[in-house]
Length: 103
Image (tube, rainbow, N blue to C red; front, side, top):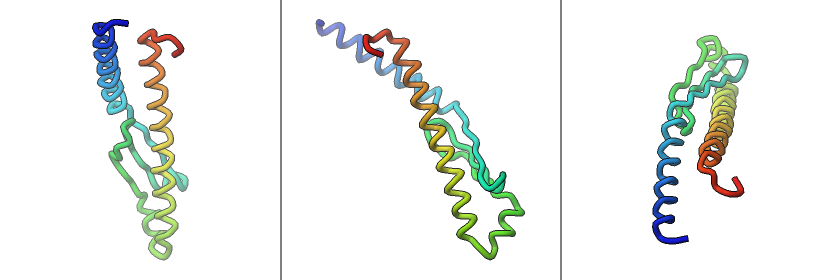
């Protein structure tokens, strides 16, 4: 493999990274916990976009803030898990399109 091929591979890797960033930024994941008491919106880059707490859940949590905290954590963790899955799928798709051996 000569130097020009390394340059081409580096260029392709940069393009893949840019495409993946664009797709992950556009991917929106929404999850909820506690039967909709807490809803989280996150993009594929794992940036939290919105956190919504149902008024009834906020009222119910007045005496037990720990329950509300647990619901928030559960919703965020589920959104993160789904974002990880989206990232893995996007990487597989983009790398598969490069035609590299073994992928």
